[in-house]
Image 1 (cartoon, helix red, strand yellow):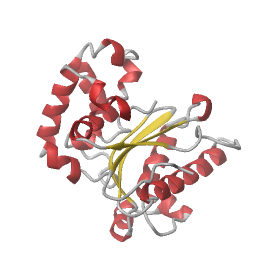
Image 2 (tube, rainbow, N blue to C red):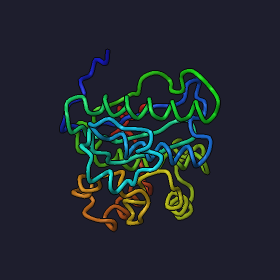
Image 3 (cartoon, helix red, strand yellow):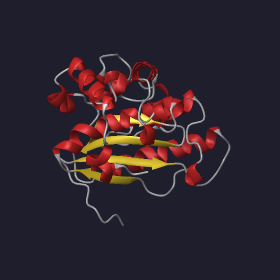
Length: 225
């Protein structure tokens, strides 16, 4: 049983990865299925397989009763990051149960495998101060730099323009949506973080300032890897 109670009106950095650090996203169809799951399983009502395969996400969003607010996300080959705010009691736990079960069933069927896909239960950390609130979305959105600069966390970001261009082109995160592009608009709720960023220009300026002189010391307790 989880010792920490995930209560409404709080914010959590949620993370999980593949068992034995194996890939959990083999191709873009897997990634798209997971992103659809973020939208479709965020509902107190039961979800059928046809909702994910054939359902229109915009129509689904108008009818759904969400368990959480999804503030940010990023998918990597063997793990994912989410920033969640529960809307109901045990909203994060229920959402992650539905999301995980749905994706594992899909993945095992598609890739002809059986057994556990994720490395145990998801991990979660409460975001409990203003500095963490401001910086954790940046950290989540910077994760894809591992692909082109594997040691960026230790050695710093060498070329900010190239890094920003790459992050802007990386489809499988909410960074592009916060930059004002239409990527997966029905997955995330930007309103809460935009109370701080104000708008796309505010997010972009703050993000650039952060990567110019980033320091993870304020959010070290939230880095779940």
